[in-house]
Image: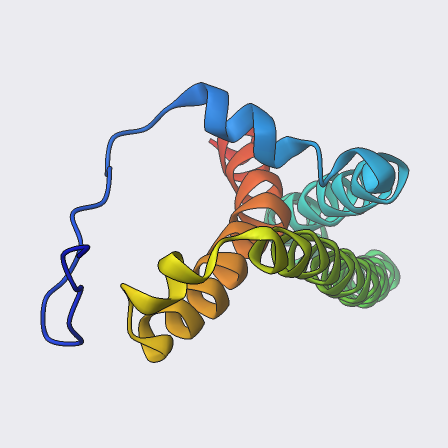
Length: 162
């Protein structure tokens, strides 16, 4: 008889980073690569626009205020407002695109996982508590999806900002 895996005993799982697993997970991004590039572009533009506000402030302090140039000050304030609005809109659209990609990736992973679980023998289910299988499936799928969507884009944007 197979060793029973009880609910209070955790299985040992690999924790080291394996790039072959990462490569396998990237297969789920492939259908959404255009949307990912679009989201990355929007993030880059929003970051660049966010860096313009300090430049406008510098011009306002160095040029407009000492010379009492109210026209330039109003223009700089208007440009700052416009860049903030555009940056916010780009960030919002990026968030929408990334959530849509994330939901589609979750759906695809869960469909593949369900298909795989249907093929497993009964002994697999007999040797594991059902709650463990369910928690592992739900948590791991969400973690992989979050890493594939937000993690990759945020890492690239953070590196570019630095």
